[in-house]
Amino acid sequence: MKRREFLRSSALIGASAAVSLKFDGLQAALGSGKIAVEAAPDMVAVMGGEPVEMLDKALEALGGIENFVKNGQKIVIKPNIGWDRAPEMAGNTNPELIGALVKRCIAAGASKVTVFDHTCDDWKKCYASSGIEAAVKAAGGVVLPANDQKYYNTEISLPLGVSLKSAKIHDALAEADAWINVPVLKNHGGAKLSCAMKNYMGIVWDRRFFHSHDLQQCIADICTWEKKPVLNIVDSYRMMFQNGPQGKSAADVQNVKTLIAAKDIIATDTAALQFFNQVKKLPLEAVGHITMGQSLKLGTTDLQGLNIKRIKI
Image (tube, rainbow, N blue to C red; front, side):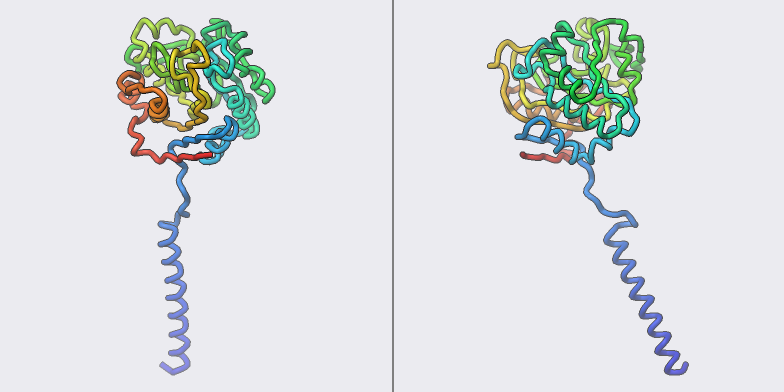
């Protein structure tokens, strides 16, 4: 080989090796061609802010409301509006939180956002006293009554249920493309804890069956319905830690300014219970529907295995 050809060949080989090294380094940095990005957390816990601020922090950490609400979808937001109580009593979900969530869903392209609950007190009084009706309407959403059997024409089958095998649910929820479960965290005389799982009782017509056929098991059973909420958002801006579910006085409430959000409903309620225990002790064994739900493979109580993002405002 002539000297000129040798030098030319060596230069090409060197250039090829340099390209190969750069590509190998890029492969190693990205990992099998995938760009390394921070994974969205399994759960977000926000503390110390106002309801709207905490909601926005949680949604941002979870990748945005667009991860849960798609353009053109009909969305149902299911808060707790069970009692004729003012927001300060913490018997119902915070109205500021619900109003803001309605706005976020509409901004994400939802064609309709409906809010309802099967209340315990007169629904008109509950909707008004809670502040939720006014907040929803101001945000562009729709409120529907839920205390008339004519709204419950959809019978669902619960083949995985132990005590509850079927139920009639509100038509708006059956017709929705997706729903968001937004309970308030509080003490409950019967269920011991009222949170994301217990909030399902507001979607069914016949709740008397629950109370006469093992309340804890029926709460777990209704959560086996195949149409799961796309997100559970726990309102604990104010927390009723005793005399629930409606409370007797302001002495039953503590301002704790916290919000928990996750898709896994068992993990959601487990985390909420752990937080509740910081104010008043309540063992997991007392809240039977949580472990029953785990047995039905609805989620996990093992929070150590989850990626939880904690945000302090």
